[in-house]
Amino acid sequence: MALRLLNSVARIGRGLLAISAITAMSFASAENAKPVRILVGFPAGGGTDIVARFLADKLKDELGAPVLVENRPGAGGQIAAQVLKAAPTDGTVLFLTNDHTVAIIPLVMKNPGFNTEKDFAPVAGVAGVTMALALSAGSHLRNFDDYIAWMRKEKTGAVGVPAPSSLPEFMVKAIGEKNGLDLVPVPYRGAAPMVSDMLGNQISAGMGSVNDFVEPQKAGKIRIVAFAGTARHFMFPDVPTFSELGVSGFQAAPFYGIYVPAGTPKAVVDRLSDAVRKVLAISSIRERLMAQGLTVEYMNPQQLGAREHAYAQAWGSVIKASGFVPQ
Image (spheres, rainbow, N blue to C red):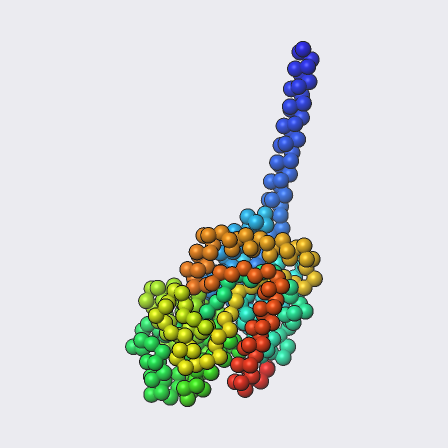
């Protein structure tokens, strides 16, 4: 009996050691997991950066690895896009961007250093963005009509845009042409420095994504006066659309999407896409994104790819009508 007891104790001990070994291996695996980087082509503090950090906070749990946001600002996202093109295809480097980099830059640059369809693989759509025109609260202007009337008196006016040859730049030019005004787009290296100059009354107006303007609008430091899109924004129902104000052609809305280098195995893409889908289903994440003025909408890789193609076609006609010649 004593021998049987000793054998039982020994078996239990071996079992506990095996469980401990498995647990230790699991923890070691999680601790040694290769970090996942999310590239952002704009400075920290801007709308794209904020979205990336919201996602990274929860993606680490879904992927079982640290998820870091890496800002590579410059050239409207081109620098980050070129980094992605050269990145490994193991799913450890992602690129969160709006349509400007992947859809608009190829339309306005002869050699952007990448080809969206050949060099990137879509992973997941994240959220819709609404473009907006905002004014510095330091000015006496209260709405879009005030701004247009003031510009007619001033004859010319500068409007900040977050990047050169960007969609906001073409929108500013279209508004000027529609109203017979000489509106001059002033490009910045991202929305954060543009908004900073608006807050300091160094520039009276700026065109950008709504999530770049939400917090300063809440603080009463800027004033959103018009939105792009087919309907009024859910957070600002009193602010008209450009269509209502007589400026057409701004219906196609930008979108945030995640991409990986072309050649990434489908199984890896699907795993990443599913992780994003699960994160976007978390109520706290949806609420945080919506608080930035974004419309949360998951898209699978095929849906995101088709959407980007349609978006490029829609805005391609606006760019062509402006007379812009690819640089």
